Image (tube, rainbow, N blue to C red; front, side, top):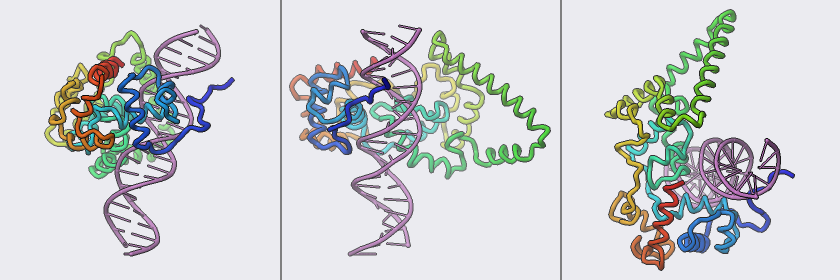
Length: 273
DNA sequence: AAATAACTCAACCGCAGATGC
DNA sequence: CGCATCTGCGGTTGAGTTATT
């Protein structure tokens, strides 16, 4: 028997969410928390699959979501993180409280990529395009006899990479050590490229990070940040998003019966994941 | 004003890892 | 240990919006 789909798709609704559906999901989660996404649509009375509910909650309904455009400094941080982490959007997003991986991924694909290309860098490798072209030219002009040597060297490189990967995948090795190992000279070089690109960034600050955090954007998320609409740049946008459910402000939403305790539970639940 | 192109972003899909039985 | 199921992630799609011709 093959693997079953995550949900029975017959009779389930797809496409954009209606305000009524949002309201149902929001209401259910705030009152009951999240035990099992598969059960959420059934219990909340929604004709959606659990996966869809989860996505909607994470990307749109969570009360602590920060809305509005990403600032230039946030963009710069995304670029630097991408140079270190690659397309690991959830890891990158974890450095931006209130931002979702989907949002950052979209922003990268639609805007930052262009900005990087415009500045003469390859968004995949983060290397200057000219440098890449030279490498390609070099490969093209290598005599046949030398190609075998190159391949052998490459094999060695691959072996080294595999060894490094095995080391990284070793469950005995803690996160910090992994980070140190991945902060190679190559990364150092990339960061210096970005220092030139982005301006006055303290490269050493990034390289010396042992706790995988950044001074300019602390991942520690204050409860007050999520509750106090006066904090943060996007309070207006946040209020706009609340008004679609009939809340005038974050405060009026928080006065909803039993919300405060549940919100705290949710907050703790999210942090423990 | 209409047609078309370009852009944005919410939502979907499929896969892989984690977990439980 | 193997299998089924659940969850989370990254890639992709396409509808809606905005800009351009």
